[in-house]
Length: 225
Length: 225
DNA sequence: GATCCCTCCGTTATCGATAATAAATCGAGG
DNA sequence: CCTCGATTTATTATCGATAACGGAGGGATC
Image (cartoon, rainbow over all chains, first blue to last red; front, side):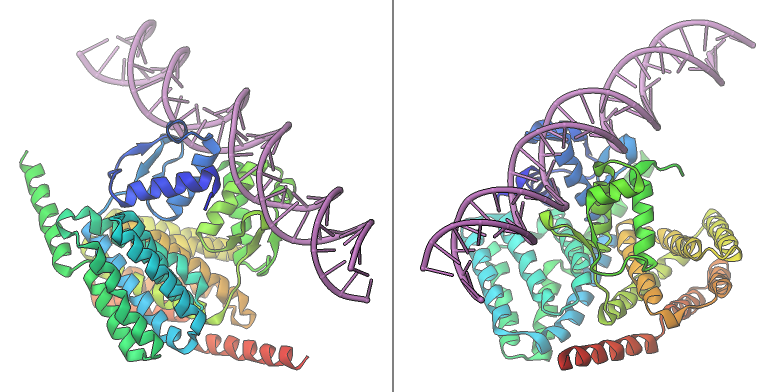
């Protein structure tokens, strides 16, 4: 690690936003963040530029930088997109996978379990995203990886935003094992089945419905008032 | 316009990369670009950071920034992704479109035709992407717009990379008209049909096959040598 | 009383200089 | 002649200062 100021700021802000410690609409001024995290404006600037590229903040020129909004419709689309990207990637993965790839996945898997063991939610999440990224990398579709990363960030952010949807950490880590098994066997239909099932458990459909219902209720309340 | 140095540099580099004036693997050093375009390193830095967010360059820390590679497989995936995003967006668009949206699209359409009339390839391309972005914006899925933008950039870049695939400019502009007509009529199936057909004409399937064949031939030649 | 303009203030945007780092080069030793 | 290590060099990363910009608020005018 030891990524230098810019990397630290990026990681820290990303964590806070995805973990919903910073709520949508929150305004971030470059100098304030620089003071808070002990670095120069330039480092914060770079971090914010990258966060904008990930869709977590919106930079409005000289009117400041705000944390982006969340809504169930977009989250549902993001998850669908993610499904599609990963499942299509998986078809290529089984044809290209080599032993080293599987070893790398097992390594990340161990890191994920370690994070789960010490109750480090964010650590689990980071490892999970890295795991999926590593799996997808095998497909060779490098230019699509950042899109997948973006979808993952947003689906997780939404998942954590719906607080009644939290799941035990260890269970999350265990869900990768059948996928790895199918990969080792180069079993394409099995991989697709396991991966698809896994993705379905990230955010269940009823959660989208629940959030949509809530949003509608809020809307009505606002119109009455 | 008058976007300041950073915006100018961004637009210029983006144009050169998408138009394939800068080929994959080309190395861009911040100070060299700054000198060439007459601005400071910081402005170039910001532009390169954004270009990385668009997937057009790859920043490798202190080893320089290189223009990303192109391959037919990824381009095909990108186009498929684009299709999917736009078609799903279109279903929402018909339910939400208002007169102002159509007026905005017509405005962009005019700009596109003007660019075509003066033989400004890049102008046509920019207007085309803006048109599709404006159409998609009506869907309200704001967080997905940058992903769509990215897919558009890459599909066009690939299209221009396959030189035998150039099409007359005016024809490109005209292809939006039936889509607009369906939109005005709030005809969902018609919109999907026209939009889908339009997207199919961007890069035809045989082009992907042609590029793949070429790449394979190159590979063989390289192995022989 | 409302409207317009103008100044002030907070914020980003830009710059030039410096520090840090990795690749390339050159030289010495085996 | 090859290999390893020190040195040079090219490049990014970071910083602090300043310029440019947009909005908010106060004051004058109709």
